[in-house]
Image (tube, each protein chain N blue to C red):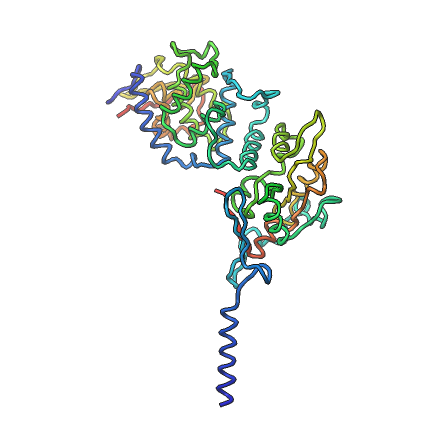
Length: 207
Length: 243
């Protein structure tokens, strides 16, 4: 009698854990959704507990220089954030039109897969070398007053690129600061695509 | 229908070109829709027209026309602006610059009639001014030939990555679509010797009345041509008959 009791208890426990085994984002959040410019943006995690990465993002040792490890801070005063903050930003700022989630990589990478809700502003386009850079700065809400910029109505930018070894988003942040972009309107998702996919989070293929 | 056309009736050329280019446009993977392609195509179009001295009237005044400066950056910036603007649907045509309209029309595989309307309208309203040495006939611009070459070169130009020069020489050839070609006959076949400023699309335009036939010439000469873009002055090309 006791044997059966224990066995059925064990079996029911296994059963219980199997059905309860979800891959949540936070204990309270299984699926994140918000509406950006009329489109629903959904972020959730890959539910296959055996899932593994393959391809480029499994590499551990890209050559440095070029792909060096970046410090936690991109620039003094610029907040570094993680995945949860990216989602909060999408809801609190991007959905309201006061912020932009920026993928600073070149278009080929963006088109291969990006964070849902992100727009592509390749780092090179805000470089002083781009003769059309000012068009972009204006498009994100800055106003030009002669030689000076007024960033009062400019969007808050959360910038990311390929990962902690990627230089493109820190570079973009530095270039923006150079023309006077307020540091409290700049944020750095240091983890980038590498950490995003490492957590099994949704990837958006733009076209 | 056999033989080399020397003076094909314009309507026939237009019809053939319409069928062919529509078919090509539908089949061509290079005409996939994406903002990048749009922007690259626009950049190519702008470079071409500006290189020819064809001036387009800008709708909004811009401080300096820098399109010739850095086409790659222009196209990348345009993509970014499109993404930031969040426009997935095309804005009203009245607000659009001619080159944007043309390049989008090319990318969307619009008919020749559509392109012709755009170009003719532009010439009418004076939005498109054609330099004297490019004028053909009363209209001022041989829009049929221009469209024919634009389409074919759009196929060859892999998203605007190839050089503007190719486009430029193609359009130069488009000025003289029905000039008699110097063809040598040898063993029942026609041969043409390549001159400076020639392009395969231009030669096809003159031989067949439609630049899209550049493929036929390329196929017939694949043993001596590495790519449709690489032809050399003095080279002899076999011009196969049109069937």
